[in-house]
Image 1: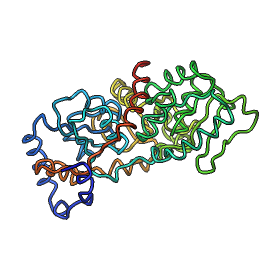
Image 2: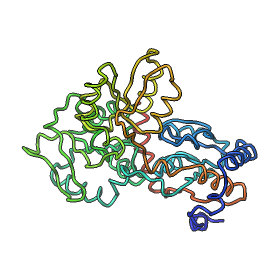
Image 3: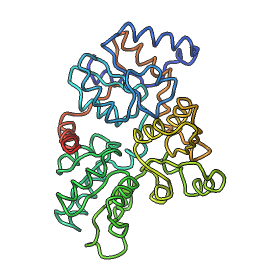
Image 4: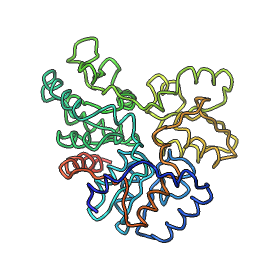
Length: 367
């Protein structure tokens, strides 16, 4: 079956999976995993549901999982339990002989979708007119393959929340200014931590095709794309103020995708892996309020019963698109493979993949 034919296979979950019990589905997943052996590899992102993560062969953040997938040359099928841009990165880094599958094609990322390539091309033309050849683009790995390719083609690099400071420093050693896509909060928090004042940062609004800034634009060092993570925007200064009043001994740690004022009020901030390590190394009996995705916070609560852990937002904050990958969709993907079919393959066009690799490699050279 060609990739086009595979892509045309219905992406709607068959009715049979809606009638199976959890026990039946779990037993079948274990059976297929055993049957396929090393031909199958299941990476699971930290934010995935527990019902899915129990079957993962590796857990981690998006780039880490794509790299692990690329290093696993035995696997013919990589069933990526995450969201679309993560599966794209895995496809870019793996070989032609390997097939990357996303169990549910609706598992996108609202942040990645806030910067499409047409908006970015238009913005780049206007920003070049305003600032000339003084800008280096950077993109968070939470972006589409097309945006990574745009950045690679224009001399820039990808960044992760773990290495954002190193990459922003590198970019500003290359050019006078940076354009940071697609998450304004990570860009702002990173630049601020590097000593760049807020009045040297502007926001590009892709819907209005305009620069949001008051003052002399010659002073601008950082151009922030107007995008954000819908999960991390749900953590507020009001959440922190309430905790300071009611539980003053609680230590607050948040992800740098949170707003600048939230990060400023928190006790600590860092990437997903940084947060996990901080909790693991914390003293028994210590109290923590964590500002990141709900599934990870719940997993940390279960894993560390010796610590008092809560979500910074009492309503908890799930990533709705991450949650689209569930047990029925995972089983459907695996059963299709076992029948010789491939549903929901992720395939990045070669010209886009080649430029995206440039951006990824520039980052890896500076890690």
